[in-house]
Image (cartoon, rainbow, N blue to C red; front, side, top):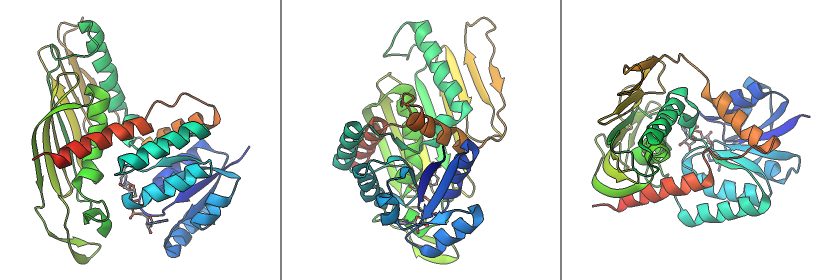
Length: 334
Ligand SMILES: NC(=O)c1ccc[n+]([C@@H]2O[C@H](COP(=O)([O-])OP(=O)(O)OC[C@H]3O[C@@H](n4cnc5c(N)ncnc54)[C@H](O)[C@@H]3O)[C@@H](O)[C@H]2O)c1
């Protein structure tokens, strides 16, 4: 049976989602954008149909939708999708409003829908190896809530130019280094070490108020750099540094303590190193990953949850609520 899928927003992320649906197979794709030229260009590239957002929402045969629009549009689009009983995957961050996230979550449960956020790093083998490693450390410590005898500190880094769209550099458009970059690492931090219990330090800066975006000089009014130092539920001290001003993309995570250490990245040039001291070999194991299209795995996971009723436990609404709680605590810290 062919599945009809709507893609809303035809910018940078949309082709990545499309590559995932095409790899899954048996899909008919329909694209939509507030800028009709963008929808037409994408439809020509991937031989899809074009519809308006209203047409997608009112088409009862379209049950699955990818939302690839800027952050400030997510609330309205997702609310309309769940009202009309559509399963959705929406790019991160889902929302900057806790009440909207709670309302969407309630509707998802009532209508038995899958609602997923696009935290793509959950599908990178470097980070699933990291999660399995932490679970192994936990079982060796025999402790569910505190792994600090083995691992007591972590550092997460993400940065890039983020220069292709003006909205990414505007506060009113909910751009900035927190929403665009830090959220990815908050998601990994919470997955690995639990929610924030204490905040020691938050630094937010606008280092480059004037930037050139797509050849146009713009005034940025939202942070392009953020650093946080926090403690988490598993008693790990975590530092995260995120920016929208590095000249090229960089991303990695490192954690360590008396008995264990880990380094991993989404970047294929950085190997994953795991070391559990006192383990049989007592030497690090090193994994090279190469390039992989993570959107193939992400969309497969999403569609399997929708079509095969697989348990949905990755990138859930609850995860997005936890991330938003962290962001609000970080934003309010002074
Ligand atoms: N997962 C990742 O690694 C990753 C990377 C980059 C961006 N993102 C996220 O993806 C989302 C989109 O980012 P992007 O870089 O593709 O943005 P983009 O600016 O390249 O594309 C967004 C598109 O949405 C369209 N649009 C805007 N408002 C709309 C509306 N109301 N209805 C329909 N279309 C609308 C725009 O015309 C544009 O074509 C954001 O949430 C961003 O944070 C995720």
